[in-house]
Length: 140
Image 1 (cartoon, helix red, strand yellow):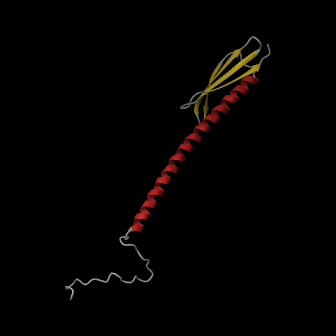
Image 2: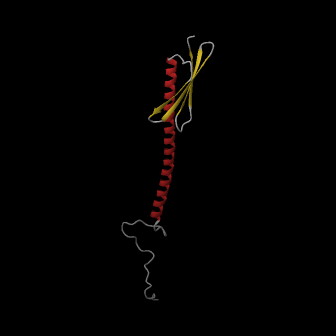
Image 3: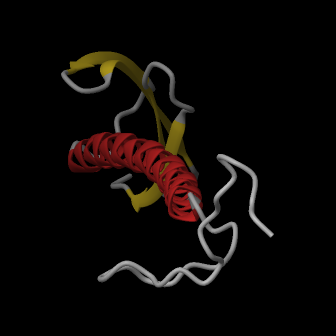
């Protein structure tokens, strides 16, 4: 029996070309799909890492501001102790290059037994106030 014209087909068992790997039936284009899936997973992992890095940078920035405020408050307490606990409370402001205008409030409370309680409150723009307290013996 003779096949119809123009309908010649290659035999199903054609030998593979030299240097090519055998493929499963319907496996055309699977490499592209695998590469796109790997790229999508890589992008997802990168977005998680970027979000974590941004959160850590915000936390670090807050810690730096807190460190500066603690240093300012500790300096003010040390100066007040060196002056022997001032008799009155004081309010001052200072211009810090990193924090802006910093307000400082020193409050002194004296006890009858010669102990003075010193409290310093330091506030800067866009930060919660910071309070430091100490006690010292004063000369009567």
